[in-house]
Image 1 (cartoon, helix red, strand yellow):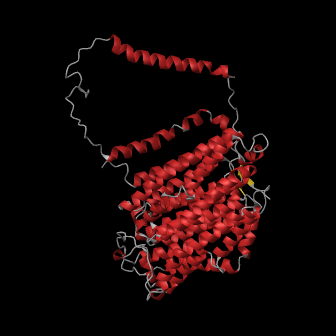
Image 2 (image 1 turned 180 degrees about the vertical axis):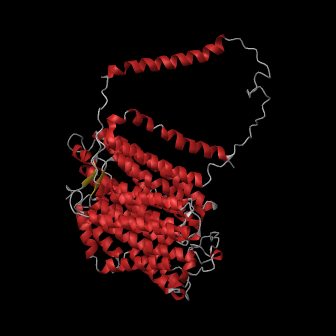
Length: 512
Length: 118
């Protein structure tokens, strides 16, 4: 007979390391309970304030935990902290704060209920933090689902709009397929290496398991596919435009930034740490995926007349750039990817904030027409959008330029120079659609050639709130201005971010 | 090591075999005299009133989901209750956390009116 373990040992837990997670999960429960009380003050002020407070506390604790070097376990064998996990967590919290501000005046909060909305948002952030710190494939999957399930619900936030329900359902179906593929891949990786622990996997590969082991390679391929779904890497990107368009815009901005950061955090850890010895095998495959993603994303964005769809396709292209940093599997690649993720956050949050401000007042909704003559009507919104577009295209003096420069340096140093050329060509194509947005905003007197697709039926949301004016949304405008300012700041003075990123580079001890 | 699985295999074969045998034995050996009344679905002896297009109220699904949430999750408490002395204080604290989480969900569901039949 099998002897039952007589005494169950409690795992060693580093409560200081776990504190940020306590803060976000506790905040999630608190807003759920507070949200049960009715009243304008509770629903519109107290709940978002508590959510923002939970995020700020988590940020503070994350900063306190910052320490360069190899990873330290929080829960033995399940969660660990290293600078990569902490850096990515900071990006999640910043995006979360921006989303809380952008949702303040959104009617989706009233439709779902402020408490539920914020609880789901904080739940998704907790999942991302778990994912970024996972030390084990089981924890990885738990974090993956904890981040996905709240987002399925949130994308269907406009319960009474067919568009939004469609987005939620599509995301659920595609996301489940992605999760299942990932799980299958992880199971095969476990079968090949005999361990679910990343460190043990890294030791086993090349030692007891050959890098050409078919079981291992099948597992790698399936895991890469599952993660590619979440990061919207082509050819697994088809859901992205529809879901981004249908979801409430604050949630779209959260998905576009935080979900992508989370997906890349775990891709970096799985590929550049656990599977790094098999890089010769998966490197070319991921490089091919990155190329396809850059081409398809940029080509797809050109014909879009909806800003949200355009940003979705642009996000696909950006995922391709980011994947290039993972491909090389070097310390430089890790640093470049982390840097570009931070830059990507600022550029996209700025762009989405302006889209939110404009779609609330324009009869064109999120159509590109809603930005017409914004330069004259409201320069405080037009400038952040201009900066965001230039940065996404990679213009000098923006964080986007430094990020791309860094990525290209990394891929060239990693013997993938042709991938650097693909990045440059992709950025050139992207000018077509990024510059069009700028032209629509500033060159009102000249006809700008817009995509000649039939206009989508858009319901004006402006009629619902009397204060609906782009300038009467100070919180949205300030998010846009702050994000754009950060984009410019880190484009001119990148050294603070460089310092953080070089700490991040020390996370995986063995990397060259 | 594989030998220890032999009883399980025998059990599996017996279970499937007996089930299949009884299912078919009945229809092979039993007398069959069908009539219209006999072939109607049984509904407490009353003439059946249910049509193919009958639709359930959505409340049934809600209640079923809540049942799974609160009833099935409580099953997890039994193994801990039985072996609490072995698993120690840590497991007790974990269980309390689990119950608190369930309680929060319960309060939320209750206050949101999901327990009222509509």
